[in-house]
Amino acid sequence: MIVAACLIAAYHLCFTAWGLTSGFTFDDLMNLGRSLQYSKASIVRDVVLFFRPSPLFRPWGELWYRLIYESFGFTPLPYRICIHLLMACNVVLTYRVFVLVGGIRSVALMAALIMSYHPELQVFLFNTGFCYDLWCYFFYFLALAVYLRHPELRGRDLAVVLVLFVLALGSKETAVTLPVILLTLELAKGGQWTLRRAVPLLATGAVSAAFVLGRVYGVGGIGSLGGGYQAEFTLTKAMTQGAALVRQFFLFDQGLVLLALIVVAGALTGSRPGPRRAR
Image 1 (cartoon, rainbow, N blue to C red):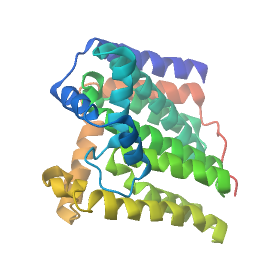
Image 2 (image 1 turned 90 degrees about the horizontal axis):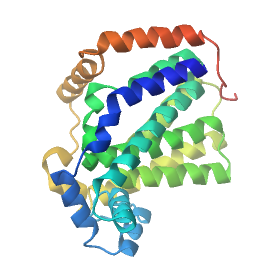
Image 3 (image 1 turned 180 degrees about the vertical axis):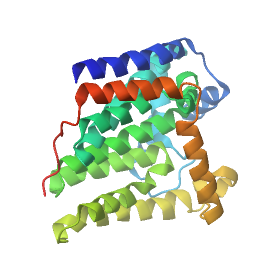
Image 4 (image 1 turned 60 degrees about the vertical axis):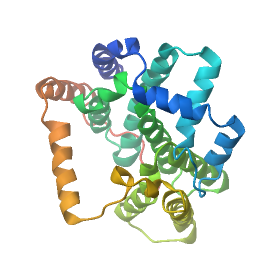
């Protein structure tokens, strides 16, 4: 297990360390400039009041830009270090969630290995402007980890999941899918439905609905931007995106290297089960 983890870490650093030398992009300057136009109190308010339209659209990312700037000044290195640490955390979270879902460590290591480096992820290595996706993934998978660790969420655990969900929504609107993922996990689990089991789904569904109606489709919301910010639900779109996903994740130059490392990681761990959810 330790050897496999070191292998993944070495693979990750080998292909990503160069990103620390990247400078600012146009997106960074735009995002940083926008974060300085508003007070920190107003940005925090937009994070908390997720159901209201916000001129920042993704306020958590703007708050992060602002805090780094005020702490370290106008220099790209602190942003790059934070981004690389965030990407490393996301690899660990990927492993943890897959262990909790399936209980097979070798499969979880394969997922973590894919997340440790992939050509389609390289944009995150040099463009800090994509921090919104990384923060969304971080809070999203952290919420999943808490949920899977405590399947019948009690008050405190449910509150933690909802807070993480709100932060994920404040990072990027794609987090709105969390209730659907939770429902899918519960359907796969089977068993008898109880009120306690349904409460997390109802709570996250209510948060998601409030976000979509307010922040996305409210007056001045994200949906008013047009273009790629408008939701599109068609069979053609689904098939096109599905085909693109297959090409992006499996057909690339380093595919043989990644495949070989997946085999090695699987051989090092065998099929030892990890912790499973309580039933």
